[in-house]
Image 1 (cartoon, rainbow, N blue to C red):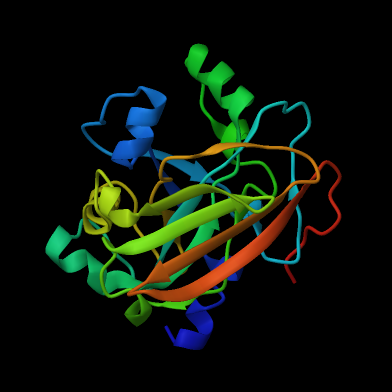
Image 2 (cartoon, rainbow, N blue to C red; image 1 turned 60 degrees about the vertical axis):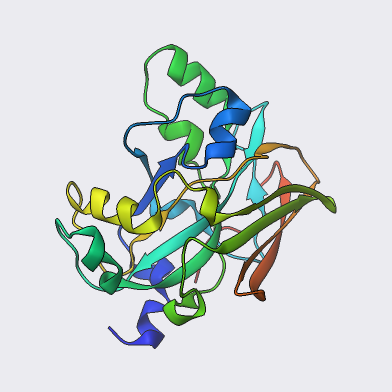
Length: 229
């Protein structure tokens, strides 16, 4: 697939696969044990939004959280691929937010129910433009940061991941066929926390000491811009 086409992954990718609790500091911050294998959940592609659109708090949510993440964009089909081969199937990356209706998630966990409403609502997956693979030669040495109204809330290296990117992708490929345009959100570092109406999120991704991308999203209650043309 051409670089021009894969840069439009949001428009044709079939899956948003997410990994939870994948940073050591986040697990410690939340008092959770280190998982023995990746914790996996999905978001629908209708949860994508781009800069210029607003993040909308879902109806009935009273505890709304930000989580900044490195997204890995799949370039070629991968099924049951070994760790030492799986990065060949990666086309590039994106800066992502895993917006979470935390009160929904906590209630679902308490009842042993799925997290779909907590993680998959419209606008739950803000993403940046496509970043070519060569811009991040080492996925264990990228910097993610996030500010709320100018105050730094998350600032971490991907070196703190429990399961590095190649392990995550290989593991997922055992169960899901990874297809061109799919994206894998690789987990949020420590500092995930609440945001509310009219606050503004700024986030960025760096590698090799160079800023690769950043974006800004506002939080609102009523949807003002939704559809990606």
